[in-house]
Length: 237
Ligand SMILES: O=C(O)[C@H](O)[C@@H](O)[C@H](O)[C@H](O)COP(=O)(O)O
Image (cartoon, rainbow, N blue to C red; front, side, top):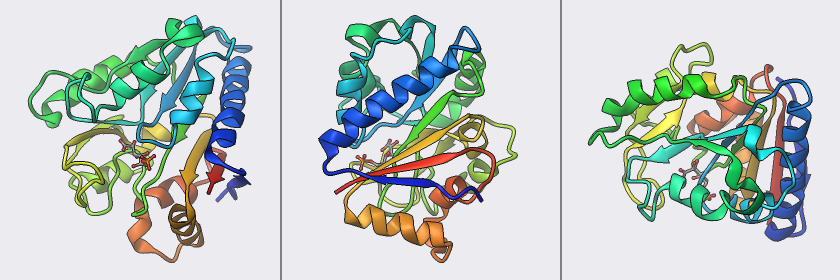
């Protein structure tokens, strides 16, 4: 396992500003060696300060393709949609020229959308230059929830699929939506992972998962306890 680099910030706003510069630097660095770069984002509330600062970063956004680590199986204009969050908070100003690959289709069931989304993701410039992940207090990341259906297939680092329809086993904090999630093998098909967490509870979950003595926090452990991709952990109170 590559020991994750842990950085603590004074507050969430300063973490967002600092990480906007970190993400921009990584993407610019990726574009030095190829003419396209991929950035995988997470939804939820934690990345909002980052998106607010990232949209004004002066990088070659027209060469960058964005997608999500996961999304709720709701229309892209739904209040719970991560796509809606990205379009509302990030795809403006300098970042408006980035390309975005959606993880939802108009299929009524997430399972029915897997093949089309898998096909869409062939156009993503793999390996991703950067993956931004969040985490829940239960140790979920992306939409890889402890106890969820399809979790074991989605956690296989050598698995063939890039996306899996997930029925959360634990009630997600906002609503029992089915999800479309990138698999661990897709998340590890990258050059760098930034895990962004807020608050003492998540820090405790992270530390338990890192120590490896909390089977319940399994999903995030698939990201922490691997030696393929460097992981940076960024935390604010
Ligand atoms: O769709 C989602 O909800 C996210 O992808 C999820 O993995 C999120 O990162 C964590 O649940 C943390 O969410 P908060 O940042 O809102 O605490």
